[in-house]
Length: 173
Image 1 (spheres, rainbow, N blue to C red):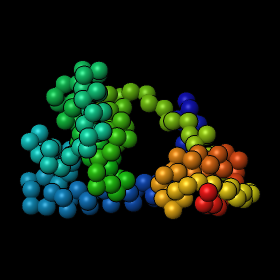
Image 2: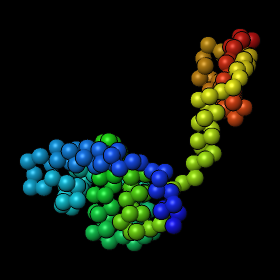
Image 3: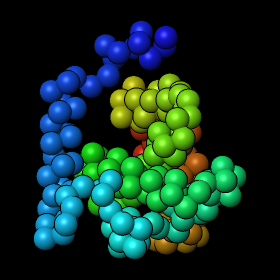
Image 4: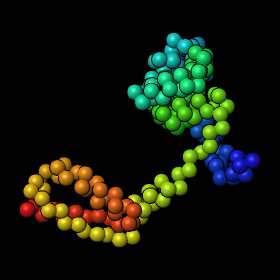
């Protein structure tokens, strides 16, 4: 019911169609000269070439394979679907989020959208500060800003929460 009630909140049909057409074109170009044109038609031997995974993505797939007891067929299907999801997002690499969405889709799991309210609010604070503050940072090695990176990051992150741009004035002790 929630999905039906939120239908008006998603992408419009024209935008979805455009993304699908673009993803199909990517796949047709990828497989030019092959006996097939789309990710879903790939054979198992070709998955390693067209569905390369980074270190974190491999870890996620190993975890899914073990915990969800995926068959080889389902494992391969997840890779193909993840490749398509990546194509829809114009991503050359398959990322963790593509794999997670593909696992949910292939296994028909109810995977609700994450609650990003706090994250969105933090990004808004970062992009639209309401004040500015200058902090003096006194130190012996101020010419080496990396020596103070954790302090600088802590000040800047504190500024985000306070909706403030933090300017640092470096003072040699």
